[in-house]
Image (cartoon, rainbow, N blue to C red; front, top):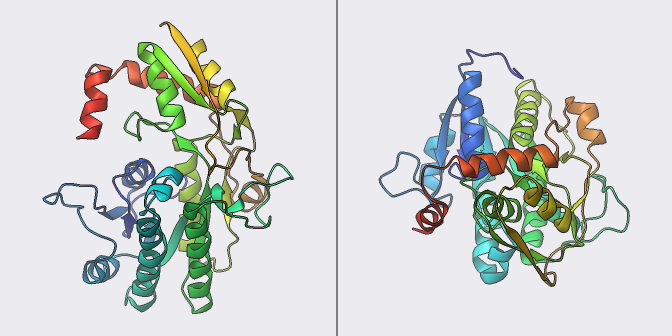
Length: 318
């Protein structure tokens, strides 16, 4: 256990319905934390329904909490390309509101900001270190760079903050069904065709349990007074091509699988894996679940779904 249990503290999680938000709530509960969640993706009658632009709601929630893990916002490159204004509004303007609320809250909460490996763009030197130049290629990445700058600006104003950079987090059947690893694993569980957009593209896939362990360690640092933390990579340091990932999914499937190869998307980074050395040194953290193990687990989880997979996909779309 990373943090002692029986803790009389409450943490606010924005984006509490997402992959990372749901898993973080589970881990915090296990560790004895109390938490509040807010996410506009919930039905309006849900206890955690709320909009991160609602200043009054944010003030009320922050006043009860000693920390905020800010996960909410547009979380996908393709979503940013479809609606750049919404992406900027959700990822930059709303982040500033949260930081301002935290700075002025009587509870003086620390803030963890969830950023992305997209801030680096396409790097020549791999694995990428945290101090590499930020070279965003798309609106989503530019919004993350701008939000990171806000986080550091508010740190200079006295707010205790931290930045974590995620990379292709996966591991839940309830993730977006068209994300790469869930899509591959869903097909592997039930048979069908895997579409590979740029099989040569290389990414650093990180299993959700490992990512949550890293976030907990950052929380521990902030709870113990750390102020000038660097941006942390929660990455494995291992690159996997999309073709390799598809082949791993196929290798654990007992169903007929076909591949369709398509070109890369023009707005995507094609190669990334991050150097986790600094994170390991300062947090004592490293990934434990390999990409092969993670894919095997996720394929099994899809097979164990009570609903047939077609009904499951339709249920996500509703």
